[in-house]
Amino acid sequence: MAKNDQDQAKKKEKSVSSADKQKSGKKKVKKGGFLTNFKKFFRDLKTELKRIIWPSKDKMIHSTAVVLSVILAAVLVIWAVDSIVNTVLTAAGFYDPMNVGTQPSVTTASTTESDSTTEGTVEVTEPGEETSITE
Image (cartoon, rainbow, N blue to C red):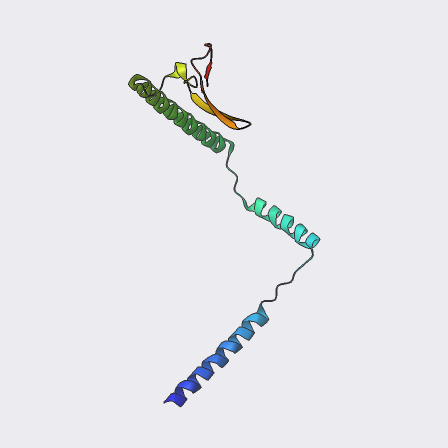
């Protein structure tokens, strides 16, 4: 029984290898030079462009109007949502458009002088007021 299995396996290998040889023999791709391929590309491109069914002028105007209408609708929806969120956040106190970027900040700076270390605090107040430096 083992011998029959071995014989069948050998037959399969032979049939597979002969099938591979037949396939590889049939498909030989000719490689041309750069200029040949370049010319072939544009020749094929011209052929494909002739096959295209171009839309009529009326269809093109209609399609363009639909696209522009959808874009305008999207812009209006985004603007409306932005305005509503801005109003809600401003009313809730999360956002104050008058004081954006003018929040007071505190910065700690340290300097080293020969043997001693001095740390100072710089406090920045509202814009237009003096800045105080403490050491």
